[in-house]
Length: 262
Image (cartoon, rainbow, N blue to C red):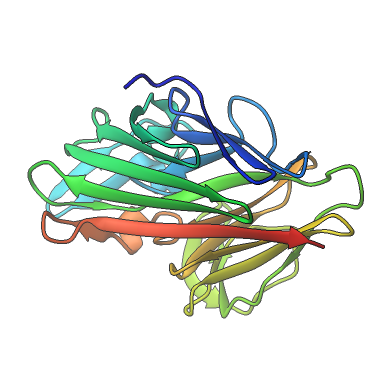
């Protein structure tokens, strides 16, 4: 199938999917309100085969050190798939299945599959990575840019993490876990019972971001948007907390956004 723009609908919810632009959700409208920041870099994109920053763009697999392009110098950030065209495998009125084959500069062949499912009150994103040959370390996650304001009061974030990864001057975790600090944030938090963050636009809409994964990066330092990013490991996780992708155990993750009137 082609990689043309896809529109999913369910009730008064509408999601726009851009396979050609990193497999991202380009828009999510609920009751006429656009929840995601618009623009080629924004919406909600999948982070794969790593999430956040990888220190100096390098990671080690056994005795081999691999170098990724420094797309956020001095680090490599958010994987390679967000800059690529994905293929559309299947589309129905409310669901799309996209695939992406890992290629250079990523050193290991593999297949990424993303399933996007829309209902009247939720959006569920599921992603998996399977090797096409040898096993390899990887991470996956999502990077949504929620609009800070929908025409009313500014958004409010509510969550209760068990810890915060201490952030160094290089924006990477130092390896120390500290008590959660007040924002603004560009920080990774631990939620061992699963990610659970409530995004509220007072008087308009409440959206709950959940995931079985225990890591979430929250970024609210930008004027226009806030980000709540469930992922399978912390920033620089290829080096500190890698998940091994094998033929018997592919890497899988899911997140669900559920909304209701605030």
